[in-house]
Structure formats: C-alpha cells, structure tokens
Image (tube, rainbow, N blue to C red; front, side, top):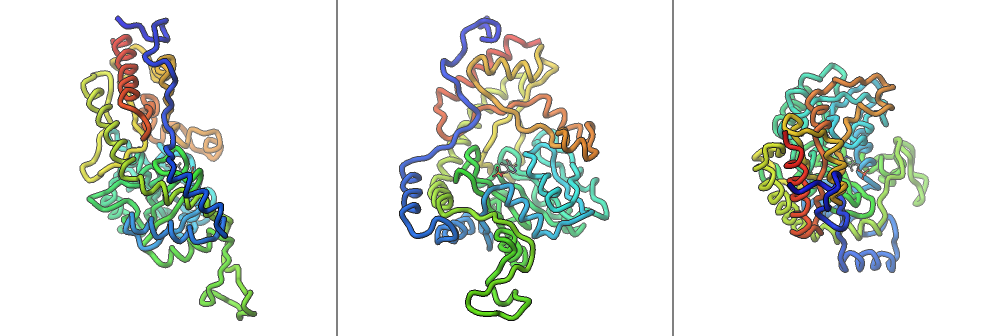
Length: 397
Ligand SMILES: *Cc1c(COP(=O)(O)O)cnc(C)c1O
C-alpha cells in the first residue's frame, strides 16, 4: 500500500498548495493604477460606481460600501437599532465577527445550532433561542451556500426580528434564483483576499430599506451629514454639517473600489470554476465511506467559497488533527473553518460554555477546509483528492 508521507512515504505533491488564494489579472492592475492617477483616492466617483454595480448584481435598492466585512456587520447592527440588553442570534460556525458585531453595540450574541447536513444555521434552533430580548438574527451563508432564507424570513417576521445575512462567503450565490443581497433585511459582503472577490480589504451592506440605508451612511462616516433634511440646528452656511448620531470612519478607498469593480467582472468566471472544482471533489469523495460530503439545499445556486472535508471518525483510525497533519505532509496545507466562536477565551469569560451547540461542536471535531480557489489547475485538484484517498485508505478501520 502507498504509504502516507507522514509515515515516511513520498508526498503526492512536490510543492505546497494552500487553502485559498486571490486571483488578479492585468485589468485589475490597470484599474488600481487608473485610480492612483485620478483626482480622488477616497470619497471619489469609484465609491458610487461600485455601489451601483453591487445593486445591479444583487437587485438590492441600496448598497453602502465600507472598509471591511466586519465594519459592514457593525454598521448593520447599528442600523438595526441593536443596543444594550438586546440579543442577536447567530451560528457558532463562523468567523468571530458575525457574533462580535453584537458585542460592539452592547448586545449579547446567542448561538443557535447548525443543521447537521448543510452546516448552516438551523431555523428550528433559531426559533428555540428567541426570547423577549431578541432583536436580530445574523445568518451566515457558510461556505457560500445560502441559508434557508424563506423559513428564516418567516421566523423573523413572526417575532419582529431584523434578518441580517452575513454573505461574506456568498457573493454570486442565488437563492430560489434571486441573488443573495436582495432577500434579507440587510446583507453584508467582505472583499478580503481569501473571499471570492477582493479589494485587499473591503465590505458592503445591501438593503431595500431606505431607513436602514440612511443609518448605514451615518455609521460609515462619523454620524456626520450634509443632508439639510437631517439637521437639528439651523444651517449656518455653505460649509455647515452636523454630527447627528454615532459613527466611525469605515470608508472604503477609491483604490480598493476600483479593484473590486474590476474583480466583479470576473465573478461568473470565478463561480463557474469553483463549481467545477467542488464537483470534482464531490464526485471523488461521495464514493468513499470514510468521508461525509456537505449537503446542499436545492434552493441554493452556490458560488462556493470553502470546501469542507468531513471525516467519519467511526471509520478511520486517526482523528481530524492527525488527518490535517497527514495532509500537510503530502504538501496540501488545509485550514479549519471555524473554531466555534464561543470556544474562545474571550467568550468563555463572558459566560459561554462548551456543550451549547452539539452539532456545531461535532462538525468542528471532524472537518478541515481543502484548497479551493480560481487559480487551481485540474492537476492541483487531483493531487488533493489523491492525498485524501491515500490517507483515508491507509488509516481505514
Ligand atoms: C471574512 C468574514 C467576515 C469578516 O470580513 P472582513 O472583511 O475580514 O472583516 C465576517 N463573516 C464571515 C463569515 C467571514 O468569513
């Protein structure tokens, strides 16, 4: 039998492959240089141009771009009116920011469990966590797959909650043929380099609600406005502006906006290639009884951000940690998305304890993220599959 490299065999690849990588081309470089040569590096025309483009892509009425996906979530929590003693329900299988946005505004994150097959937040668990203090739900389109938006919308409507969709993984995904971004009360994107589209850093909030839109604009820029209809005092002259609420400097630069605009032209191409890679993985792994393949709801036409390899510990002699190390020895550098948020010491000190969400905790123990990005060749994909097969065969019970 072919020995895994961790046991002294030859690795399936000579060079290392990592779980994600951005893809930029000449059009992207040119777009950035064009902005650098223009009159505006920030607060210029590229901001409106990008916002218009995001509205067109998603069908949302309003878009507010900002410095990153975390700022987008903070702004959304502010616009939703979240404050002290309010509760925000989210999933533990996410990046910390999805829950931190509640803490930023003095509210309390509450964790609902995931569905054991799709790994997205389970609407039934959400409903079971609702109290008199619940004000919002942050539903994360984990791996790019749309959450169960219709059931979640219904629950939020019934209980008067604001539905915020954290679509950091899911730009380009459709739910029931409608683009993510037009469905929840507010939807947030991230343009970090590991995400599907990048600006180096960057984020956005999309909404159809004019009231949220106005609040998002204030949150982005110090709570300051030049809109005379919002003034509380008399206008003192042409220079006059007012700070009417709390806000931050969460602005995006025109340099980043120029890059994101250019990247968006490649979104369909990125989505198609990512789908191809996912299909290659799924086809190989669905034939193996040691691997569990993530299920998709039929409503989601997914622009996939992450590929989750879930091992079946009942059928292997090694655990996830050893599997991860064995993959690294084959020169396939995986990652784990995510450590349940409430495992972190900061959350522990706030009183959260292990055992809250059993499905999420079990998934965490059994998963790793395989390389998935536009620039992977078919040979790269095959080498990852070969590494999984080799390790799985060797350690099979
Ligand atoms: C990346 C990410 C964020 C934060 O986005 P940044 O742009 O890095 O601030 C939030 N939520 C999820 C699910 C993410 O993956």
